[in-house]
Amino acid sequence: MITDEIKEKYDSMSKTQKKIASYIVQYPTDVSYQSVKALSREVKVSEASIIRFCSFLGYEGFPELRKALQGEAKAKNSMQNRIQASYAAYGEKKEGVAKVFQDDINRIALTLENLNMEDFSKVCSEMILAKRIFIVAARSAASLGTFFSYYLNMALNKVCLITDNSGCSDAMADVGRGDMVVGITFQRYSTFTVSLFQYAAEHKAVTVAITDMELSPVVKNADYCFYAETAMPTYLDSFAAPLSLINAFLTEIGRMRNVELEHRVTELDEFYNRYHIFE
Image 1 (cartoon, rainbow, N blue to C red):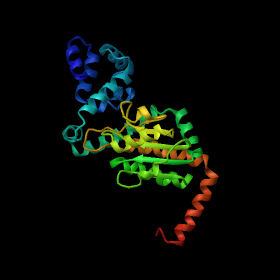
Image 2: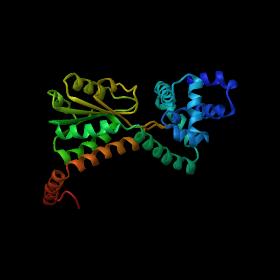
Image 3: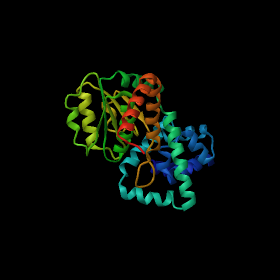
Image 4: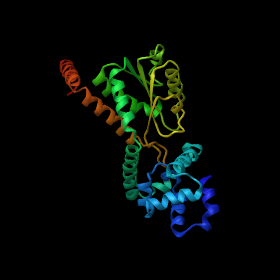
């Protein structure tokens, strides 16, 4: 355990290192999804001091320390533990509400910081060229899948949403080359999503994972991985960052397909008006 390592070496730490150590021991879950810049701001020490602290503990850098903390968080990720942690993190009403908003801002910023722009552009292009796109998302992540598939289908008209309660997973039976499968899953990872994502990889579809970290079980079967920060010390996950990532995909594809999208939206508006879909 990292906290045990810190406690063992605490007496030999400098004053600055002790400040960093105390914060990590007190807020290990927060640190597991913060950027070095955000941690520097919280602890009020320099980013260089944090990097030196990581070396002091035997880690190559802050990302390696954060990955280790995420691994520990995964082991403790029972619903009961998360509820208990939320009491300390968001205990005061006014301050707690503000901290929820600020934590989401930090998650979005860290997700952007870690975004591989080259892969992002490639995936947008491959989505446009794909024969079919399947979006696989289960349980709470199904809400993200529904949002993504609705607007992506508006732009491309070839998207199928596969969720654990839709009964349409057999639509993927003939998945293969030319198809793309987007798997969306976060701790605690859905076996439904993991299994179908593996099936897609085995059948040579292009696989795109939207998940939370390198330890996620979908990573090993992904051609492209996009990490979005979701962990928060309460009974639910924050989907602010993955939703921002999905918005970025939709916006870029809309930009690339602007003429076709305008034509498609015009057709849809005529359909909506004819059948009075909206007030």
